[in-house]
Image (cartoon, rainbow, N blue to C red; front, side, top):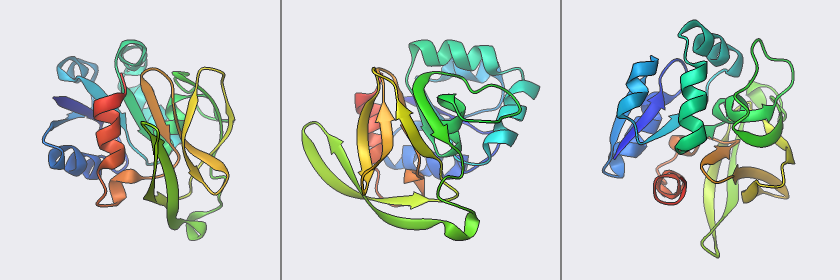
Length: 188
């Protein structure tokens, strides 16, 4: 399977490493025509303001919206902000592909970044995975069609609708492939 990774800015190389570990082909997406060969898409962490500006500069908005309405997309950290319905003051509107309200940098500044265990619930099972939170956003409100999937303490840190998976943390910065595997096998 070809898994696209929006490669405008952020940690797209680390997502590619995870995709390769799972036996799939990563496809770096910088322009709209590159989405054509992708079965699914990952929008990585990075800087949401810069990412949205580059999406506009590269004329990707309408193509990303079309892709996300019919095929699976995963967003991590800044990618979650880009996919959300509402994320505060941004230079361009987010894509509104998942009914989430998000508070940007809610855990604090770069110095407040941390690694901790999260509880991931999938297929009726709970499993602990490592969560890397770097200037992470918080999900402040879930829409009625959005299912919480993972928690850090009592906070929802990962959620999904039919074909969008959004995480406040960076699963690509660990050696654990289970979040990416869940996205590839269960979302969309």
